[in-house]
Amino acid sequence: MTAEDTKLMMGTVAHLTVRTDEIASQAALRDGLAVLTQTERDADGATLAAMEAAAGTGAWTEVSPALYETLRLAQEVAHRSGGAFDVTAGALTELWERARAEKLPPSAEEIAAARARVGCAALELRAVEEGGQTRYEARLMKAGMKMDRGALIKGLALDGIRSTWQNEGITNALADLGTSSILGMGVNAEGAPWQIGIRNPRGEGRADLLTVVSLSNEVLSSSGDDERFFLCEGRRYHHLIDPRTGNPAERGLASATVVLPMEGAGEWQGHMGLLSDMLSTAIFVLGAEEGRKLLADFAGARLILVGTDGQLIEE
Image (cartoon, rainbow, N blue to C red; front, side, top):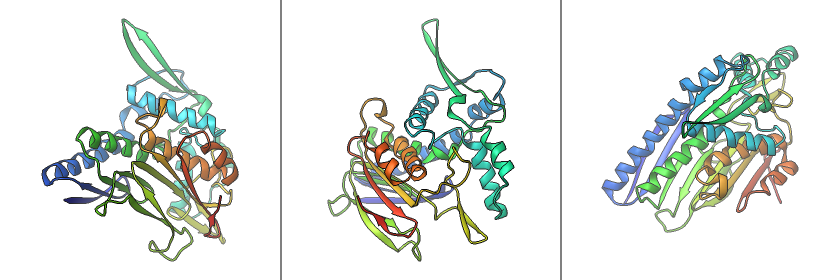
């Protein structure tokens, strides 16, 4: 049987679908929603707040092994992307969130001040061996630095759901977090891969699709300029900020969608949702040419790019 549940979580509509017997499917839905709740709670957690409170003082904050690994991988993508992805960009994110609420872009001085509090090189991590135990710590080296929680949360949620469902023996299921982050396990009710529509960011509505992607034991993350934006004097200001300039990225893309195998290799094992989330953001900021170069390092990856004219960018 197929069981489904939908909840408004993490600022989006989360839709979970599980195909197995009734008891197992209901348990999987319940546990999947619990993962979303916990991920949302952790994103606003005391540890990141403590790191931010100590920013610029040189003091270390103890972090969990899981958060340490998340931040370490975020630093890896920041390095590979030349700073196009930066988990320390919270000051810029907050600035542009206020701008969107006011429908007025920030001044050059405000952007410069926020940029001065951003930089992945100023996020330091260390593992301390003590008495046969390992303690993990992090610190932010510039005063006023903020973490960009939204850059990671959906990818982390997909990884948590995947792990939970695999432990429960679930093989055919779909976790759709607002169409921008999707986990497709196994096959749908027709015995075929899950079919995911890629919307036209310049279309009339959600039913305006450019193409359909097949998803089977894969994760998908999409970053686009059509969800959170405002118009001012005829110009579109969206939420995908280039940390290197402090302004919304302008590289000719309206959306970037990354599809990765559900099972990763090496340090990415168990983190493919997180990786896809970070890569779609980085590629949107980098643009088509540099984005393809970044993705070339990851086996089995697929990329769907849409230009600002609403047309697919062909390989």
